[in-house]
Length: 337
Picture 1: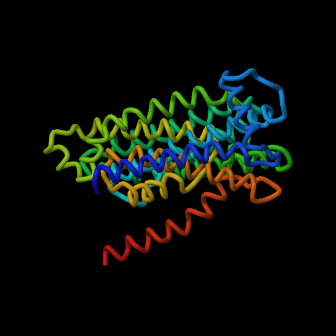
Picture 2: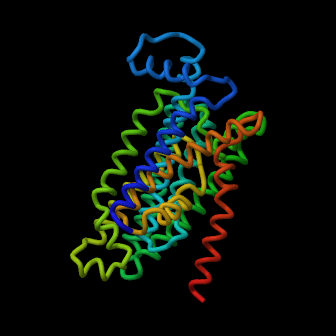
Picture 3: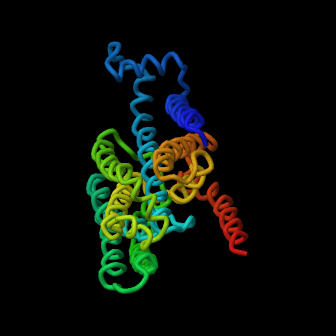
């Protein structure tokens, strides 16, 4: 693929993301005209005097979830792409090391405590990070001498099972008329509850996790050739692996604390990005970020416009992602035959 073709495809991704970002303000139960939207946006940016029109109120309500969709989509997609490189497995998703199960358990505990939103997000984030820390300790530190990649994956399965069991126990103990519905709804994933004050810290954490991965994209490329080959080429495999796990976990835990569990994005989007820009991490990671933000933004638009009641976005992404995952499974099986 030539450099000109790549630049055109990246330009199209950026243009589509910008267009969908602006159009998302027009989608919802309250109709806005393009003129009202542009004037209200100009008021939000300080270009024109701020007005207290219905358009400004609607924009203030829709802005957090639109920005949140961009952040969560980019975080999950880049995390999934980085893990697929590191584990050399196209079926790997951001939850492979137990971050989603740990974050879900943390959120359930916080809901039982009647925790405020900021504490709910903090406990959710801590639960995800704790789960991956246990996975890393078991898979790398306690299982030395074997296949480290396989050990980490098996440790992730064990930790995921543990925290999923703890989550099930918490749901069993929850009040079925009060707490249980809140826990179940949160686990379905939604961007509806995001407020403006919820965004600055997650934006910093996601950017802080994404930047090292982008800077290390050449070394991440070499990880896909296997540990021995990467070491021969001068790569400190254990150090790079630790950085990838830390950064991907940071982004995934932050995304889950912001939106709940949204499945299939981190698995499907990296494959779509490969179709567009190839398998080179130098191109794939930025493309995954753009495409993940674009697709989750579209999914959120559909979830709040197709039905009278808003559909949790995690359900929609799973329904769309399952057929694609089945296609990947069949394709991978045929390659092995």
